[in-house]
Length: 92
Image (tube, rainbow, N blue to C red):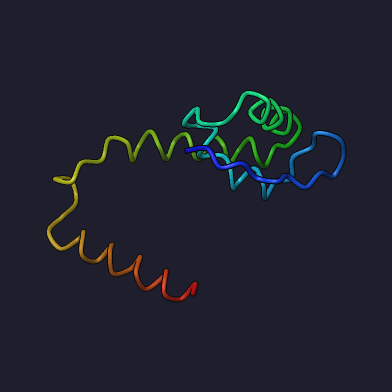
């Protein structure tokens, strides 16, 4: 579901890189309103760092999208879940 962010503007209709990172998944999933997508695309057109990040996210989604549960080695799922839980607890 689309969650609207209150973009901080550096100049009219500009999108800060940190805000781009926060909404890139919505953009890739097509869950972003057209006006916000246009702002994001304008930012990408001027920011090489965000363009590279967008391509990395596209490639990650392409590769991970093919990953099946059966592809995870025995015990791998439990190690991944534990690593995530440890990371999440450190963020609290």
